[in-house]
Length: 520
Image (cartoon, rainbow, N blue to C red):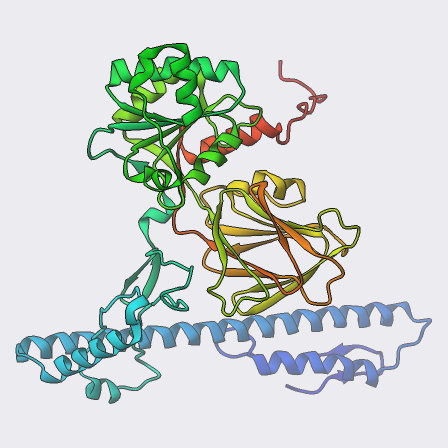
């Protein structure tokens, strides 16, 4: 680029060399940008000369435009070079694949080395998985390893084979496994059932139904007698009720002599082997009571709304014949409501397996300060990691079904009951930054009362079975392997949204008025 020349009259001329294609190259543009300050330094501008001031401003504008043009051209050249490199890599890869296929067709024999590699991979897979592993044994074979090593690694990249396994502490661990991950040529995808509604289809006709009722309600007692008669005469089902309900039915009429019941706790433990369907007449508390009766697997529950709350009771009692007829025929949509399994470990316990429990809860386990005026002091651990120290009125460990109960009142979020997780919600924490957490289902939570705590703590499970936690005692909580399947009127999502709309009047307000111009 020629230097800038200024004549005695103050006129300046900038000469730039141009290539044959008519575009300025990057070097010439950058040099022209540098020429402007040189020009301004060589010709001092007098403050009184307006023409020179305007000329200097114009030259600065030209310099900026030249710089932008140079940057744009350099960026375009770099992008074109990158696309060219990708094209060459793809072309070379295609040629390599064609060469492999052709050599494979020519050989058309058993490759002993490939078989050895596969057998070694299978042996390593068995050693990796162990008894607690859930993983795929598929081995990715992209040809002979020696031939692959001859290829330039910068041009051809092999996708490594791997497998997934679930880690558990041991056979005595409360953690359980869910096969929700599929494996296909090194790519991880969630299983199909994890993203769909759950449907229950009867493989054989239900034979036995248990009816659990809300106590001390005349309307519920009348409906129960009517439902028992209809199920027996129209559906030919065997019916179980609680002992005091059977006594009430027999007091009314000896016709109900066919109704079954149980005598002791041992027979209750075996109910799940006899009962095909559970019908509850009451509110959410009746559903909690029904779930607490089954310490292991729980039959499908059909909850009818006869209480003050309806988060888990979508069916209306007035249409029980229509609903039960449809449910007994199937298929039906269900919601798997996860439960928490809790153990209390006393300070005097010799090992972590010497516990009180297990105690199953469908809503939440609450640890509070009781009647003490002191703040609770609780040390919380997630698996083997320290979470936090709770100082406040207490802590709520809730299921997602219980997210609309005590946890919601304490500031926790509402969570769809089909989401597997544990809600970690403090009660009136003495910290402005203590916000609730939602933890995954596979973790084990441990809440311990430290030895320097000023007072004891109290734990309650679904609002009952209150236990005192002294200094050194701990509560261990994890997801139980036996959820509570509840029947849906529509599906799990529709029932959940209807429950928060009807039960909580969630986001209910008057619609904003329209004050703008209206179309005629």
